[in-house]
Length: 280
Image 1 (tube, one colour):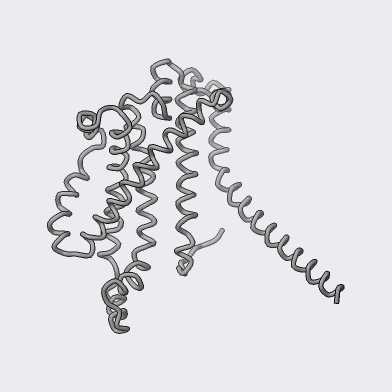
Image 2 (tube, rainbow, N blue to C red):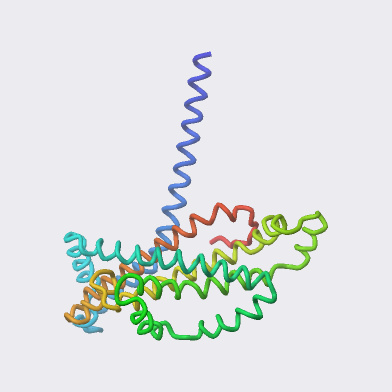
């Protein structure tokens, strides 16, 4: 009996190790493929400047940018700027996404609300982001409120359009099938509408998050003394192109990480999808 138990434990342990190794290999393979193109681009950039094809004064090579990143990391300055910017994006994204979800659900579901509210929101969507800056400074000053408000505006419109358009594009036949099964009201929304809308909603959230990272740069131009946007401005004023490139790379890396976190958080809700995915 003891031998059987030990054999079962060993078999289970071996199986868990194989599963863990398979997952690790799959993740490592995806990461390797994802970083291949940026790595080749950085290599070409380094070679081009070393060969004299481009000037390294205004376009510093990756080795110099990496050295600047290391210095900023050692001093703790870069992590501090990243943390401040992430907090601003988080609150701006949360406010913008929540208000956009409510507004988009109302205009998408109710025809009267759509005719009443949507034209005004579409007009506001056409206003350039930088045009909001002087108004927000007058309303909220140059402190955190104005910065978060500007980010929230940037997040609002793609999420609003995504949720409203997704509701309007729900197949009528699906709703009719739900009614045949005597679903109505909140039950119909939860069982039929929500699953049909959610994939497009996730895409809208990702678009909103991306615009949030774009708008935070304009927000941090409004008298900020901390944040990656401030690091950009400081690099421009002090004539430090390597610092500017370091801030741009930090934006790219952190933005990609937050997008991956959002995707990972929403993927469990989309396991029911049987979508076509071509491998290779």
